[in-house]
Amino acid sequence: MILAAGLATRLRPLTLSRPKVLVPVQNQPLLDWLVAYLCSGGAEEVIVNIYHLSEKLIEYIERSDFPIPVHLRVEKTLLGTGGGIRNVMDFWDQRPLVVVNGDILSAIDLQAVLRSHEDSGATVTLVLKDEPLFNGVKVASDGRILGFSGGSEQHLAFTGIQVLERRVLAGIPAGTPSSIIDCYLQLIAGGEKVMAHVVQDEYWRELGSLHGYLQMHEDLFRMSRAPVPRLQVDGKAVVHESARLGSGVHFDDMVCIGAGCELEHGVGIQRSVIWEQVTIGSGCSIRDSIIGDGVVVTESLEGVVIGAEGRGQILDFRL
Image 1 (cartoon, rainbow, N blue to C red):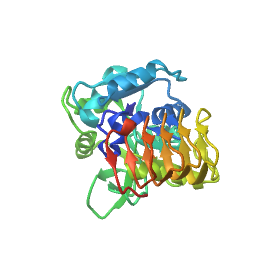
Image 2 (image 1 turned 30 degrees about the horizontal axis):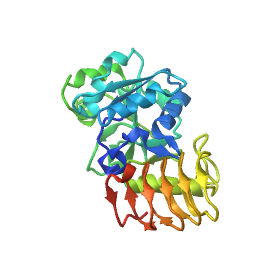
Image 3 (image 1 turned 135 degrees about the vertical axis):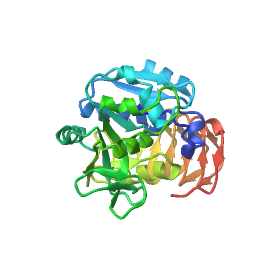
Image 4 (image 1 turned 90 degrees about the horizontal axis):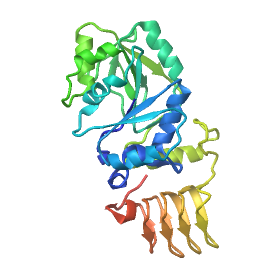
């Protein structure tokens, strides 16, 4: 399951026109990367919960050709992480369910996670990593998760990757909003095994914020080896084959140019991600910015985030 029903407020104004899982990563919607990731771990089917801009995701899935079936579950009201999982109980069989957040890019070995889950006999296994910005999960020396704040035990970050046994459903109320973390706290209090699978150097990035999104593209640009198949690295600009570049167009540092873009004479782009069907006028310079679908740029910009077709802007944005 891909958890994707949130409002993605940290990515606004970009998500005023696209649900979070359709935000492009190197010109491919994040959903494509997530489905490929789950396939690499042995997934046979995927279900995605959705609330915000659900019609956009329905349309995208209908015209896509994924290697495995991808189902949608539209929430009429936001159910939270717990309620969202409970709402797809008919999708489960008796095997464990792998659940991933819809705002991550990962190369963490899912088969190793599943083996760890099975070997420990856990009810739930959470994949954790040392990420100081997010560390907050208490872990005992035997790998049991003790809680999600405070204490003196080892603290690690939850990656948004988890494995659940079907019996977890009994602790989630049906049809009402709830947090899966609250369910896990009840399991821990009842003596159930909620275990940590800790990873070290395996690639993982959270891109649920504007800074995280642009920084992830910057990090990939500076890598010498692709952490995920088909990602472009090694200091190369990512330019869609349908983009039209005028004479004298030049790139500096990380650059990503989407489908159908037109960059007129003398345009310069530096450390920026340009989505689809964007037109940038002659001589304009774009630096440290994210430009959404269909925007027409007629002046130089720096530190700006503009949503699709100019819907909503954030100024003075920096890495």
